[in-house]
Length: 220
Ligand code: C5P
Image (cartoon, rainbow, N blue to C red):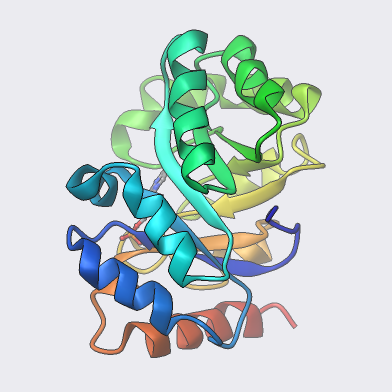
């Protein structure tokens, strides 16, 4: 199931309790909104790739494997193949590693390739931000399916979406990292990524629906 280029929320599953994750995936069935699930390394490390299959079994939402893959083409491809074979609809790969890595994974033809173009933590100023426009040009030329841009820097999202025109844009850093729901979408992102503010809430399904409504509501 490919992600569509339309407004929505990606829920980061970074919790370290696999049963909690599976129950939340089940609970999300029928949630009001356009959602996708992103499985991060913190969750995957608890059970291995089996958690991808488990979440897919319980959920009808697209599942992204966020391994932030950044290795040589041979290894990156193996990691991506393992994730796709387990049921992932998309994988996240770093753009800075170069076009050969992205092409190798794209050539598998098993699902979406999402490239990280820019990050937001202070250290990202030291290196990645200085080359992110070049990364954006490269991923646009290759034709990846999606890109990751930082929600906490709306002016960067605005600038980079002018370079990356075809791919859908997913933007993390909402709530827990400071950005408000809707900020990134208003600047050109398609999906906002929210983790802790949802899965640590007393009622995670309700929190997902509320944050979705808040983000999308600001865009009409
Ligand atoms: O809990 P929180 O909402 O901060 O989660 C943000 C999610 O987005 C995490 O899964 C994190 O790995 C991911 N992410 C990020 N910043 C990036 C790339 C990915 O926060 N630049």
